[in-house]
Image 1 (cartoon, one colour):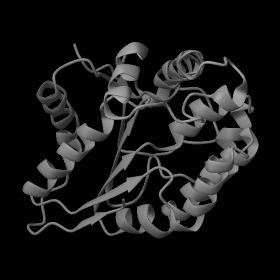
Image 2 (cartoon, rainbow, N blue to C red):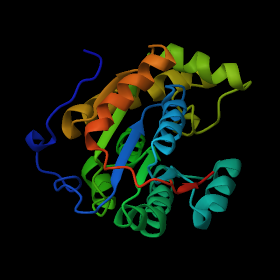
Image 3 (cartoon, helix red, strand yellow):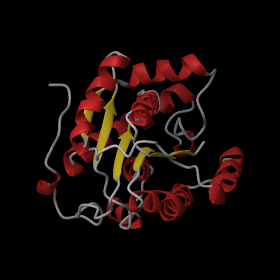
Image 4 (tube, rainbow, N blue to C red):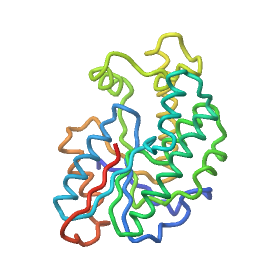
Length: 244
């Protein structure tokens, strides 16, 4: 069995995700650390859905125009604290929910999100913020139709990242936390803690687990089979809206 699913109704009480979304559309989420291959799979899924005649909207973490410049400036100057990092991402998410995700769901579109609230639940907690407080920031978020966690060994993810660029990013490696002077070692410590948090989220929120070491075509087939029962009847001509 390649996909593990837990019934969300058996999860403990929490400030987010306790009720199913009443909106007409479908919301599918992919989560995982960088190098897990989730973005590739979501892109392939979008193409398949478009070919099936579904209206598709793509939403990406940290893509809101109102905070993108602030985030970039803070990263360049390395001045973001764990709290400011958390609040900036929550602001980004709130803007995208209000202007993009919820209106699209109301219109009956299929929304595909590359990262969602679970990214904050993992990263912010590893950076030292209180889990309950972080969850309270996102209490307004629409509950996804299905959410998938792409599980990948740390060393494979690191190798994939460095095959595309020369070095790790400062915050990606957790260098702001003073975990290790060497970026690669700091990355290993930081991201291994994030992986632990993701495993907790799998149990808490019933995320489907994808073995991200499998061939790309195998993962895509499993992903399509997992969402197929949740798809509405195609409308014919698809609407596409992508945020980059």
